[in-house]
Length: 175
Image (cartoon, rainbow, N blue to C red; front, side):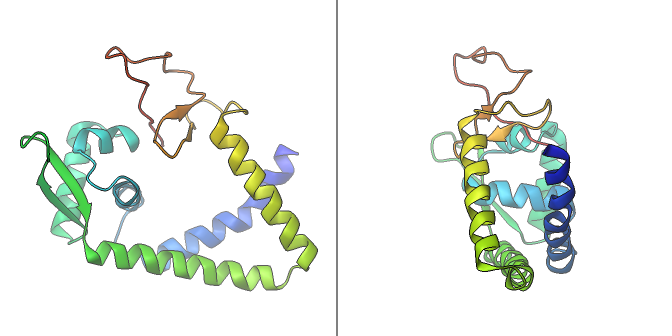
């Protein structure tokens, strides 16, 4: 089943990649991922961004420098600690993400139009269940590919203990 799903998912991944190449040609994959993380966690600090994108802090800082120079991110002093920097999307980055999603949806609509109503309903039902199971952590993901909860916590991370040294749950890292 996993092999068949992996093979079938190739078309979905091709749709995603084609939309990314067309819409965000001036952003690298790492830059796009960082922009998407900032969108999900508006006001995120640099350390948490580095953790969520599985980068060294210095690499994330340089990446943010490039995104600020490109007009994609804004930095502002943190609300609670002025030494900390909060990251926010610019209107330009928000537009690019909206264009990316619109392009993906357009491409998906064209493929879905060729499917039967029963096939579309079954696909949606199956994808929703897949998402729910993954988010609940009922299926342990393979090493290095933790499923993220909406809060950004890892599910089934083999490298993280039950708690970090500070007594807080481990923070997600994704590749």
